[in-house]
Amino acid sequence: MVMAPNSIDSKTISPITEDGSMDRRGNPAVKAKTGKWKSSILLLVNYGLVTCAFFGVGVNLVVFLRRVLHQDNAEAANSISKWTGTVYIFSLIGAFMSDSYWGRYITCAIFQMIYVTGLVILSLASWFLLVKPSGCGDPETQCNPPSTAGVALFYLSTYMIAFGNGGYQPSIATLGSDQFDETDPDEARSKVAFFSYFYLALNVGSLFSNTVLVYYEDAGQWVMGFWVSTGAATLALVLFLLGTPNYRYFKPSGNPLTRIAQVLVAACRKWRTDAPARGELLHELDGDEAYREAGIRKILHSDQLRYLDKAATVTEEDYCQQENLKNPWRVCTVTQVEEVKCILKMLPIWLCTIVYSVVFTQMASLFVEQGTTMNTSIGSFHVPAASMSVFDILSVLAFIAIYRRVLVPVMARLSGNPQGLTELQRMGVGLVIGMAAMVVAGVVEVERLKRVPASMPDQPSSLSVLWQVPQYALIGASEVFMYVGQLEFFNGQAPDGVKSFGSSLCMASISLGNYVSIMLVSMVTTLTAGDRRPGWIPGNLNSGHLDRFYFLLAALSLVDLAVYVACAMWYKGIKLDSNGERGKVAVHV
Image: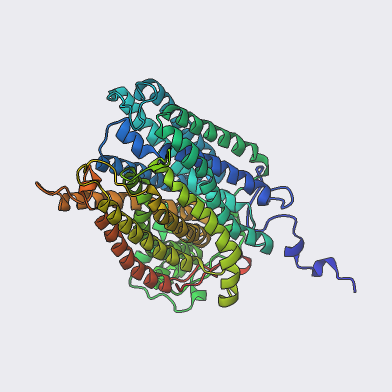
């Protein structure tokens, strides 16, 4: 029997996307001509090159600060934490501009231009003002004291790099996922896979920086390293612009802060009003057209945070004054209320990831400083301490493959979840592995101290730097579970109007982790150092107890894990109306 065309499910033959995405002319995006892996692969290459440039500067920056700018260990570690934290706090600015006014594409383009400009200034400042005499900054050649102008340009350029990279990151993650229509089953599966490949691109991009560039920079070739980073970022921008005709776009939905404030004000105005027990009795617009024009989708009512339902409660006064129903400062829709609920429900989960970010940030600071006080020679070959992070990268690459090819099929059969583990479960596993990394780092430090020559306390320990491999590998494994899980969770659970904000929460967690790390290092230094006590993290680590700081982080991670499990069990996911239903993320860890 021949089936009539109208009886076929239109979703299976629709030539255009149904998630509200558009082409560059503002028309509904045609599936065959826009988006999907063709555009996403270009964005992944772009992200890999941007990451290569970023780590070409950042991975060895703590060494640059000590050798070229003459900072001590604690000062350099805190400088790195401040800078890295600023990179990711700027992600909130990028996310706000992306969601509210510019859209993902324009935001990515503008911040990449700022990023390239910062790299050019850093390269020029290092070439003409900082690395003097030429080739200094290696383990033997001392650099001249830096000039005031050189230091000023250094901080201007590095914070331009922080601003450009921070504003770019949440938007590129969201723009990449926008290339897949989640209402299409095939594209929805590709969208889930995209976040794993996104993190893979980050690590592949940083691999060159952590192996080749770091080796030359450690040997004093700082200027060359910075110019290579500048070239990579410039190529990334060119490739990004070349893909313009084929991207899928979403229109920005306006200032989310206004919508959030409207819900809070409307709820407070009706603090004495009882919200109806049934969600159907709350105020909501008929149909989806108004939401579609605003670039968002309707969200179903949830039973959590019921106080906010007062904002969507229609009182007798509202019925008498019909203009109130059109004033969102008095009566909000269920969708608007649920947007605020979604954000508030994600915040406890997000806060629990900050302690993990404190653990993660040690890899760029104290791990490197620990490595410089170990035996960095393998035969006649010198291993730069900063290049040990290559084992973190290799661990990430290996565990992404292991997770997708081995763990997902096994866990899917055991749990019935096609993804294997839910996002929240993966984040919990990441916390556990991160805690184990701190324990291992502490044990390595104990063994390192035992092998410091008693007659030469200022000399490096005889313990090989290769003993750091397990702690780097464990951090890499934890990243696969924690950060990929975070990207999927916050991007998937964020309402349509704040998608980039959802992605920025992952970056903001790293930012606050860096600032908390600064606070912890400062507190520990203050509390443990005295007139006759060098403290846990002195200038000469051989006279300190860095191991105790690592064990402190492990203890904090254990407490954080307990709080996280409670928050994850309480969480309930977002659900979209009709075709766009989400919220399939399980809430148990």
